[in-house]
Length: 324
Image (cartoon, rainbow, N blue to C red; front, side, top):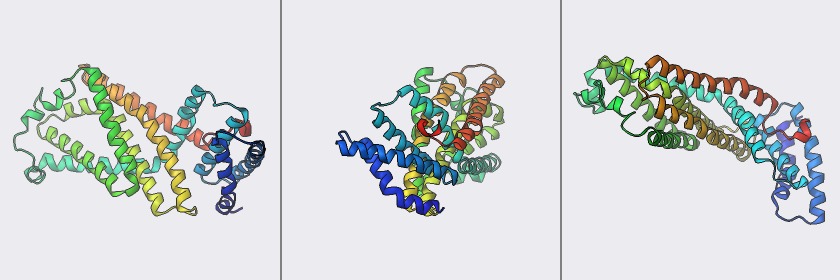
């Protein structure tokens, strides 16, 4: 079966089912039509699953059926159950499906930052080219601006500030990804800031302090930025190359996946913000602070590659009446 052709021919009926599910009032004939479309679409979804199409198609059609089921049963659904479903299926599955993109972003980002750090640390011309002052002791000295940045505000206020700022950076990387170049620019500027800071601290012989303050929160925070950038660029590439699907359908599917990632990253960035607000400036030994950051990063990667892989294989947002 040509899955794309089949989906194209059935799309009007699926759209009709979705409209009826969202309609506030139904006539008797419309209610009968809703039930008939629901049953037919359920059978079609089971058939599509056997053909192994794009996961986003299965997820989108399953979501339509879930709304139809709720309308037929006269229920809005259990909010906590839906939240649990989001956290255990939709979000980790979306992260897992996008991992080649954000892994590539991570590799390029870290290589760029490392290259800039080496350049800044070993060359006076780098400082001139980047407009950096010759004397950076106020930033790099013990008790300088690099360190006091993490402790000059109350922990709770600083955590909230960091969360807001990081969420903004991630949102820009995500939703400018449709245009590709703006997202690439945002990622480059963040790589530049990180690389310059590392280079200046290395030049001052304080690279240990740099990693001691960056790694506790930075591992998870940067991973969230990589995910946002990768998902955004994947959305942009879908506009360039929609595959065998119609461009509008491919963008709609990928747009839903991107929105899922955007919502989930709010929680990830909240955790990294709490670590940056309370753990990074805590005064605990560096190995303890870094260990906490490493545990948070390992938990996230396990969430993606264990739970996310399983959820992606099972497909997201599955209708309980179909899957049993």
